[in-house]
Image (cartoon, rainbow, N blue to C red):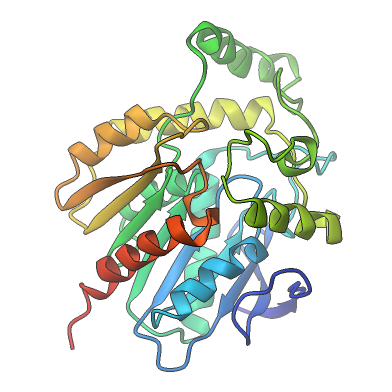
Length: 315
């Protein structure tokens, strides 16, 4: 595997010093980007799986929080977002041909981590869509010692009166050659640029909200809007498929904000109730992006992540 230098933006809210990014190629010839923040004497490396619309630089603060706790981080731009290859002619629309394709990105990330000789053991920290990708990955043998999920997308929150319509459109629009279009109610512009901070569904912290806005404003090539009908169809298929598969025997904790409005929290409860060695922690007052909340909310979560991960390390 050949790693070549990739752009890595550190001008807006950078993470720990020494961060670097690389281009890597997947088995189906997609160019994706991985970024890592090395930590001297690290006790392990966190494989960070971002959510839909996200990009490596957004997790600079998380990488700093992990570095303070003795852990290095490697993160990924999934196909179709960040600086990775976009999948449609309109780069503003999130798209994937099939959800298992993301596992090819996971495999490329792992190859990069090994080529870079990043410190073992590996741990998984996955958010939202990354939690859906991460669940399949750990079920299928991702070599991590523990997994932490924040608001994992094990189901999409759809209003009951729109549930049937969403499913019908997700399956019929691609059939009529319209699968590349945005579903009703979604926009081509990034959420943080098109919506105000007040009553936003991501974070209660204005500093973190404006960090996201500032990064995309400074680097519009990172921006991504709503998903395509095909993405929605494939996400519904994947979450249904994963609901029927047993969780692995792996130490696991999931965190969900008490005001979660993006993913289906009930399905997270169901999964964690059945996860042997797993538990669910509710985060009082938090929105969807627990890792993008203010320090008062974020620090206890990161302390618990440290305890989970390093509690599995034998010396």
